[in-house]
Image (cartoon, rainbow, N blue to C red; front, side, top):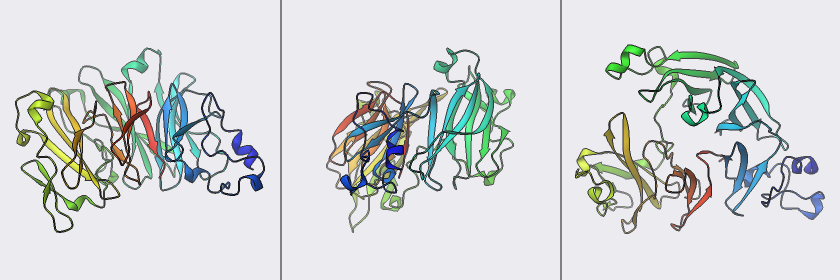
Amino acid sequence: MLVVLALGFASCGQKNVNQPKDNPSENPEVSTSSFWKTLDFCYVENGKLFFYSLKDGDAAPYVNETDDIHAAIYSKKNGMLYYNVVKDGGLVLKCLDLNETDPMPEQVADWDIPVKDESEYEMNPFGRMYFNFDETQIALERDLAWFAGMYYNLAVYDCAAKTVTVHKLYREVDFEEYGYPYEDLPDESGFNRWGTGTSADSKGDLLENVGNEIYYVGDGQRVCLTDRIDMDEVFGFGLSKEEYDVDASMDPTGKRALIGYNVGMGDGTLGSYFVSSIDGRQQMMLPGSDYETSNPTWLSDGTLLYIGYNEGPALCLLDPDGNRRTVAQSEVFAVLH
């Protein structure tokens, strides 16, 4: 079984991540059941899927998928990695079962979205893909209204029934007043369309928002984490913090907080993310971060992944010591645990 697993990866100039040796006795610390647990996240670069280990600092390419990948999300609930590819002129959904020692691609649904010209990829005719709250359904924004930068419809894949249904987000007339989202999508669906991945945080009650300043209120302390952030210096709009929207979450280790400030500008939002130690002494902006699209996500060890746009777009990693590095020229990633 270990030999079969190794066939799923190729070096491609990069070291494989904890790849088991042919003889299990030569590699007693890595077994078929523990291999995938050594991987922390995956990302897509140039249409190819890579798995990354924080421990080794290496990426291993997955070579069993020959179609170019355009988006990927991972279900911690069932251990499935879902991703979109263009096949036979249309967008289809595939998956990898990461519970298996040698996961192979499986096509699970046809989104029924034709892709007529490769130039459309740059204009993103299909939008983001995300789960509902209990990871039983996958939503995909579709049918882009170019002039408004919004999507008319939402396609929903039911993981159990393996069916796709299309729900109306907006009618064309709604764009005059920016309408009402989810026109016929049931309220109980649990989709968080604009979520950044930072809100589901068990330590969030240790952060308090007062006048758009964020305070840490744990351990009998009350420490301002944003008093060194000069919004005018960062954004240059001459606005006070009270004129921005703000959200925050703590890392799983309880040592740092992620703070996002944004101001509505035209059809979208404009803002950046900041990271602060809970003692308030270290407050730094995430270079190149964007409130709407950076998708900052904490890993279990306090590492932060996000999309930065100074070098990119690029997948950036901020480690627990505050060191930042670029992992790949990618804006598609999925955390595996």
